[in-house]
Length: 318
Ligand code: NDP
Image (cartoon, rainbow, N blue to C red; front, side):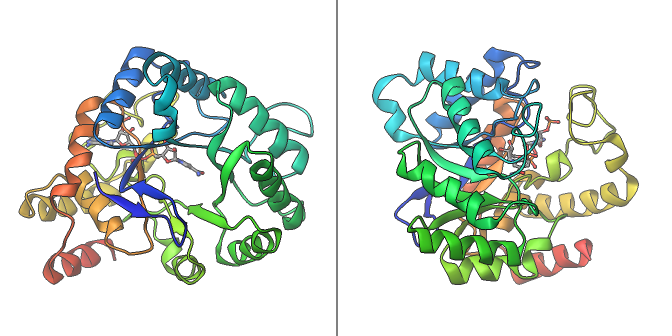
């Protein structure tokens, strides 16, 4: 594994990190998820990303992860892991289980720690900006979590460039710098390139793109139809079958042939394409099998691109 410094902080993150949004919930096979996490750690993936609502049902990914930690990572191995969680999307009924109030963030973190059977997480995120709560309150909650020792670092996710600037300024004032930003970023989703990446670079904040494979579209998964066990094929999957359309697939086929020319899988090329920017600390992948994990990690064998390859990719994407 290759480890990259997260912005200007002291923290190193693996170039590839693993997220538990899909495939680790109560509806999934526990032993499959357990096997993936063990393999990931053996391959040097030290960073695992969760959120209060991952499952389904919401909370079950954290519960399962807690059990896996206890069974396989007991004792000193905790110090070799960087575990993140988040609060910001709907988690429980009533007015306090959603968005960005101090009430929600602090109580949700407490629940996450219980589910994972941990004393602290390494990174606690505000999962999304809340237009109805003062940014001072939301960032104040992250700062409080760090000061209480329940999180080591603060992060933000899904904040646009302006929201990021505001959040970063407040955190700076409070003395708990923003460590990392987690935006949606892939060959198919490039909104961050307009302004956000420049803000992160200037501020010395790390970037960890989520859904780097566009939930599986940027792989060979859908080249021969929609498999029943795929994210678009499963009833609990977030990728809708309507998103697996000919417009996307024609691009995927062309990108796949560039990847073949590089003697790389399309998923490896999609990850390498993100890692080539200095501001990208780590790429946050999801996988549904050990085979996919092994394939994706081999991205490290070939990270560089020729100018011709990059131009060819741009032509397809535009
Ligand atoms: P990806 O874009 O990496 O999609 C993962 C899916 O792609 C897998 O489940 C699998 O689909 C398919 N796949 C992966 N590798 C391969 C391969 N080698 N060959 C074929 N198919 C492959 O990421 P996710 O959308 O899962 O997001 C990653 C993480 O990002 C999440 O777990 C979560 O931690 C974080 N996230 C954060 C959000 C936020 O708001 N902050 C929102 C969404 C995600 P299949 O299951 O069909 O096999």
